[in-house]
Length: 362
Image 1 (cartoon, one colour):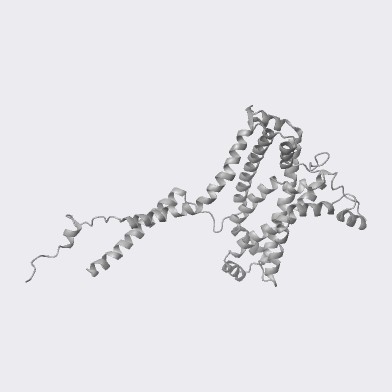
Image 2 (cartoon, helix red, strand yellow; image 1 turned 60 degrees about the vertical axis):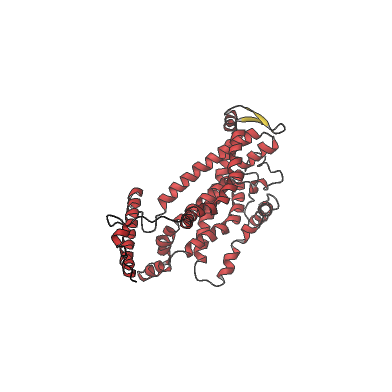
């Protein structure tokens, strides 16, 4: 017996107007979409949760203490407003410590970055035992800061230090490394450069190796030498890495503590505060005088100074170091609109290509 039922036409299955009805997503498909959207946030959430507990909470708690006359024994304090900040800014020792901090920061960060770029450029060449040399530059960073400070403080001793002994053997006068402020800054900056130059070198070397080699081959064909290639290809391509290195060097340089603390046996910054830094004075105020309200206010002042200097460094670095290929003249809104238009075109092309295949399958 033959069935008389007719197969429904495509128009009837699609709807009265011949348009295809939207297909409902099942639970499994919705779960896949949620997983695609939420999984990146879940993967990075442990860091932010840990940072909120160990980073943001102490920062906020320190801000609260800075407005109080805090008593550590009773674990409570009396609100006094901005009196702690006014006391810190009125102290001559704060301005001396700030001057010393910036002096040591400039004497350490600027030569350190220049030397790191130069060493990274040398290690990027085709040299023998390159792995050995790349590992060797990181050895000072692995050393304990206290050990480095003890070794260099003895090297820069006023009477029996290795440096002064060498200078006297050469017929040069000895340098008062501990009594003279500028000489002590040079000695402490030397410790910082010894420890951190290799670390920055490896970061810059990794960025240099990510630069396509075709750029250098094309420049060589055009007749550009090594120096021209370095300033025209290498430095412009290092912009994001240079921004990172400069910002981290700024933060670390303005927070210097270990080297001036271990530069002499007392750890107070010198008899006349020759190498007293802000963090060293913060430690002396907090744990030497047991005044944590003033120490918290000093910590927040230092935080604001680092934030301002970091913003200035970011602006200057973006201005001096060019983007590879130049900056896109379009605004952000124009780029987003063009990206959305390109996405719509791709979806339309995909739908056009898939329609003939479905009809052929039917």
